[in-house]
Image 1 (tube, protein in one colour):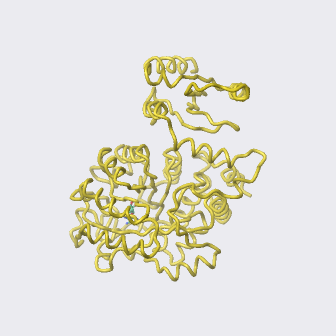
Image 2 (cartoon, protein in one colour):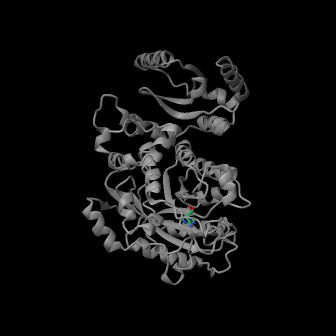
Image 3 (tube, protein in one colour):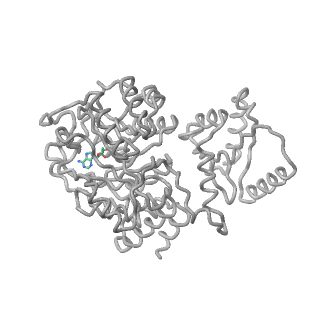
Length: 462
Ligand code: 5AD
C-alpha cells in the first residue's frame, strides 16, 4: 500500500505536503478510496444516516459569487415558509422515520433567533435531532438557538484561503467565519463545516489547508462538494469542479477524522448519477434527502439541476453495497466499532474514544483555561486539549514548546494512582515534555499567577 495512505489509515495524521502529494497523484485514487472506506467501516459502521432537509427561506443578504440565491440575483423568486409550514414538513419527516431535521436557509435575518428558537423547540418535541444551517450569526444568537434544543449546526468554511475567501464572499471575512465555527463548537453544537472544490484560483495547497482546518477545529461533520456554476451568478463561465478531486478531499478527510459524519453530497450526485454511491464507498456515511414541499423546492436553486434522492432507489442501491439505513439520530461517535474495542498491541482505539469522551466533559476550570488559550490566543502559542501522547492523554499541550499543562482537582490519591502518575510523568519527560500542574483552586482564584508561571516556562523553552 502507498506509504502515506498507510500512515493516514493507522495514525490519522498527514502533513500539508503529504496531503498535497496525495491530491496531486491520481495513480493512488482507488487505494485512497478503499482506505477511507475501511476507516469509515471501522469507526462509524455500515449504517447510513438520513437527514431530512427543509429549505425554509431563500432570502439571503450575501452575495457569494458562486451561489444561485445570492442577494443580487433578482431572477430568483423569493419565498419564506411560515412556522406552521415548517413544523408540518418536520412532522411529516419524523413520521417517515427521519431522525434528524435540517433547517436550512439563506442568511435571512427576518428570522430572528427567538423566532427560530420557537421553531426548533416545536420540532424537538418530535424526538428528532435538529440541525441548523442558517449562516453567520452572533454568539448570543447561537446561544439562544442552542438553548432551544438545536443539536447541530452546519456552516461550511468554503475555503480557508483568505484571498480566495474574500474574493468569493464580498463584504464577508474569513475571520468572522472562523469565529462563528469556534463559537458553535464552544456552545456544544455538533459542528459541521466543509469546502467547495473547484473555486476559480483554488490550489491543491489550499485544499490541503482546508482539510487541516477541519482537523484543527475538530469538526464533527464535513460536507464537501464540487462547484457547479450557476448561470445567473458571476461564476457562470467557470469550469465545473472535478468530482474525483472532491471525492479525494472527502476520502482524506475521513482518514484524518475517522469518527465524524460525512455526507455524500447532492452536488456530487448532480455531477454524476452515481456520485452519491461513489461517495458512500469512499468515506461518506450520511445522505441528506430534501423534504421541502415540491412547490418551493425549485426556487432554492443554489446551483442548477440539484439531484433529488429517491428513497426506494437509494435503499436498493444501499442494499447492493451491503449498507443499511439507520433509524437512529446518528450523533458523532455513538457507534463503537467491535474492531476498535478488540485488544490491539497499542490500544489505539480505546484511547481515541477516551480522548473524545474527556473532550466532551470539561470541568469549569478546564473550560476557563481553554477559553484563555484556544486559537493561539496566549503568546501566539497553539495549545491542544485532551491530547494523546503515547498511551497517555494529557489535559493541555503546546506541542511546539513541548509543554504540558495539567489541572488537578485535588482528590486524594491511592498508592496505585501515585505509581501510575509517576510512570506517566517519567514517560512524558523521557519524550522531552515539561509538565506544569495547577490546582483547580489556582485556576479559580489566581489565574494571573498561573499564566505568569506558564509564560516563564514557555520563554525558557525557546
Ligand atoms: N455549486 C456547488 N455548491 C454550492 N454551494 C453554494 N453554491 C454552490 C454552487 N454553485 C454550496 C456552498 C454552501 C452549501 C449550502 O452549498 O458550499 O455552503
